[in-house]
Length: 176
Image (cartoon, rainbow, N blue to C red; front, side, top):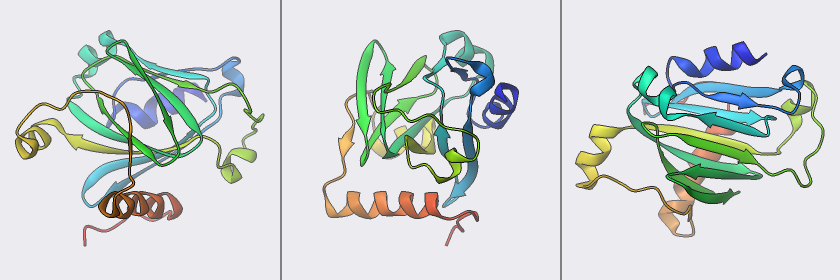
């Protein structure tokens, strides 16, 4: 249900529009949660494309960054006219105040029904919202959109494991 998708995202994440080949067949699992006090979301969409226009960004006034982790599958993220292919084990910092498009790969894409998507590990993302002012203050600069980072350091692997644990648990994760 496209309207349910909009309502699940709009209040915390902003306005996004899923584009499916057949809107009646849109299937998306969205589980919002909190990870150490930050808004987070586990997402498994079947839409071939999800868009956020500059108009959407102006209308909803969301002003945060978010770390988009690819848990399984591949998605191409387009922001600032730069396309970045994000595959499993990679993360990308996205600016909510700018337009963005997420394009799913069409090759090897299995047909999914409402029951299949619960067991599928195809194109799973975990999104962690990062308040703009806090992030800029901590970094000392305004981060720029760019290619995904493979988390091949020890600290990166620990962070990615935290994300995978958050994906695997249905209950909210406590601040402790």
